[in-house]
Length: 193
Image (cartoon, rainbow, N blue to C red; front, side, top):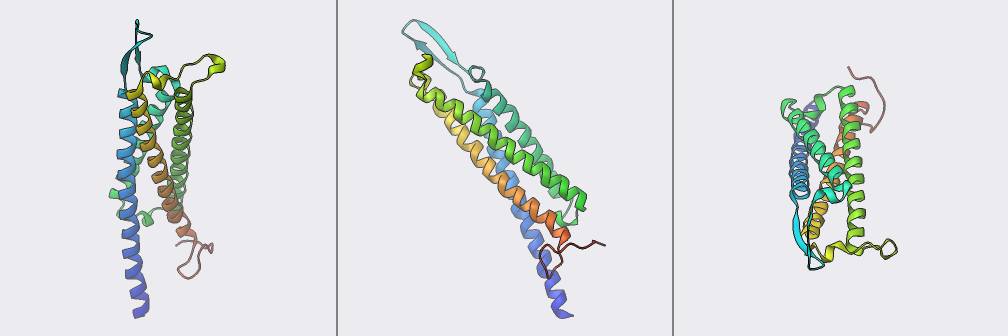
C-alpha cells in the first residue's frame, strides 16, 4: 500500500515536471516565432544600385518571406493558446483522449508547417546570396548586406523555434499515449475509467 502511494506521489511530481518543461518550451518558441516574424516583416534597406538608382529591399521582394511572416505569426498564436491551456488545466494529463489527440495533431501540423516554410525561405534566400548567372540574377546580398544578415538571423530563430516545436510535439505524443498505457506496461491499450 505504501509503495502505491509513493508511486502516485512520484507520478504527480513527474506530471508537474513535464508540464513545466512544456510551458517553458512553449514560451521560448513563442518568443522565437515573434522575433522571426518581426525581423522579417520590419526588415528594409535602401541602397544605391549601379550608382544611379535608389532601390529599397523589403519583405515584398521575396513572396516566401511574406508567407513566412504569416505562418510564424499563426504558429506563435497557436502556441500562446496552448500555453493558456497549460495554465488553466493544472496538469495536461487530466485532459480527455480526444483533446490529447487534437493537441497532438495540431502540434504536429504547427511544427511541420513552420519547418517547411523556414526551409522554403532559406532556399529562396540562398538564391539571393549566390545569384543565378543563367537567368542573369544578381547576387543581391552583395548589395543589401544588412538586409540579408537580418533575414539570415531571423531564419536561424525560425529554425530554432521549429526544433522546439518538434520537442513540444514529442511531449504531446507522450501525453496522448499515456492515456492508452497502464502504469506497469508502456502502450498497452486499455479503457480509461
